[in-house]
Length: 350
Image (tube, rainbow, N blue to C red):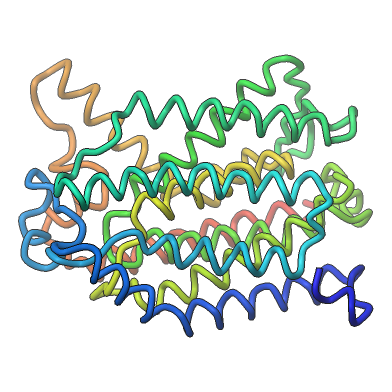
């Protein structure tokens, strides 16, 4: 841990700030170089689905993918510099980023080399996601004090449910489900990266509160050592913000499955560590809506042979309704900001 040399090893806020600034600066410095390297090795960029919005065939064709490499590499470097990697929660987060990131990378690599929007089968990806989530949920539960290890915290109403043996299956669904939700959301320039900035900023603050004794003042569960997740979340915020400079409309690079699967899984993992799965669904309402829109579309089509939405995920529905891409992105960002604010209201004693 770099700041231990300067006597700051115990100050989580200072280390989180340094982690944010380091990952932000690194992503801005190396962004153009990474994009150039991706362009060099991807002759036609990310394959665009023919059954998606037709405008994307003209506006997004040739844009390189795998931009998640920039986010993950700068974030991991920052975490290694400023976080205490001897803590279970920190190294488990790094494992999540690596395994889900490698899975996404393989998927992206097959897409660009075979020039097809379909690569790894859904079963193969889900198997890797679920097996990793089982391992991660088990480690988190073992590293959490017994009084809090299997609880589901209900915010605003301030009470706890003991899920007992059901907690690990529940946590697995949260982690893998969030991974896929972010992946589905990553369909417009800047959409997923902007929402991830908001979500991880929220959880950076929550991690500091829940990881320190002040948690009891808000009637939140106190999870020792979880404050270190503030450093992890801050590093992700910096990397995503730097990436957003290159990913905002009109995008120079796409995040790809390399980034979306890994960052979504880490977001779910963070919620499980902090016992804030309900707040994840609230703050990540856009991610939840994107997933539900796909599920509703598939179910309704199988039952009636008709589409419930003009196109799914739901951001494409608004595009098909005539909304410009920028308007959809800004509206969804605004929704994410409002939901993060509502999430912070859980800190207030009514």
